[in-house]
Image: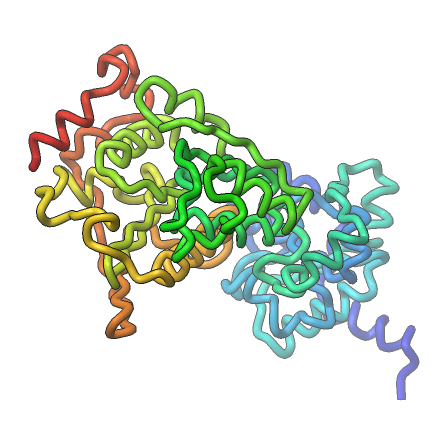
Length: 407
C-alpha cells in the first residue's frame, strides 16, 4: 500500500495544478489568465473552491471563494457549480487536500476542468495577494445560530449577511408579529417597525408579539420589548407614525428588504411606487377570513404591485379583517412565509416568490402558485427608476383619491 506522501505524488501526476499567480490573473480578468484546457470567460474566471475546514475558512480566504469542505465535497459541490464543464480551482492550506479533492471531482464526479492551486492559501498569502477575513461570530452567536451554520444554503456567510441586514416591517400587528419574532430570532441586524396604533385586547387573538400586560402601549414599544427579550443583539428602530407620502422616502431609504403588512390599498400603492424608485424588494402578504396571499415584488426582476393590481378592487370585494373577521392563526402562517422569503432574499438562497403569487386556503389546506408577469404598460415599473422623479410626479399622486375612485 502506498504511503500518504506517495499517494499525494501519484494524485498530483494525474491532476492539473495551477500557480497562485495565474489564479489571481484569472480572477482579475487578465487576458493572460487562460485555462490549461480552454479559453473564454468561464476559463478566465473560474469557480474558486476552498476545501478546508470551517475554522480555517473563517480565518481568511481568497475573495469570492466558495466554501465546500473536502469531507462534504460529494454532497455540496453542485451548490458551487452544477456545470461540470466550467473551470474550477480548488485550494487548501498547502495544496495536498485540494489535489485529492480535484482527483475526486474528475474521476468520480465527472468534472472536466478542475485544477488544484499549488502551495494553497499559504503561498497565496506569501505572494501578498488579498485575503478576505470574514466577520467573526462570538461564542454566544455561534451557539445561538448553530443550526443555521449547519445549513449549506446559509452557513457562516449567510448568517453574517443576516446579521448585517436591515429589514423594515410595515405594521406590528397580525403579520408583523410573527415576522418580527422570527427575523429577530434569525439574527437580522436591524429591524425597523412602522405602526401608529396601540395594543388592544382584540389584537391578542392573533398579534402574538403583544401581551395583555402591554394593552394600551404603542405597538412599536410593545414589539421592541418582545424582540429585545428574544435577541438583544437586534437593533430596533421605531417609527410610531402612519406611513404616508410626506415621510415614506425618508423612512424606507437604506433598508435592504421591506415587509408589507399594511391593511389598506392607498398605502400599498404608495409603497409600491416608492420602492420601485429606490429598487427595494417588498415581501407582501394579505389575509382575510381563512385566505392568504403572498408575493415578492423585486423591482425590475419581476412585476410590481401595480402589474398585479392595476387598480384597486371595489370596496365590497375587499372588506377589512375588522369587518369580516380573520382566523387567528392565519397571520401566523402567512407571516412565517414572509419571514422565510426575507431570509432567502438576504442570504441569496432558494427561489423567492418573484413573479409568482401564492394563494393559501386554510380551510382546504391548499397552496396555489400563480405566475405573474410584468406589465409592459405599467405606469411605474415599465420605466427606468431614474425617470421616476419626485418632481415629475408632483412628489406622489393622491392615492386616497385613486383608490376611492376605483370603488
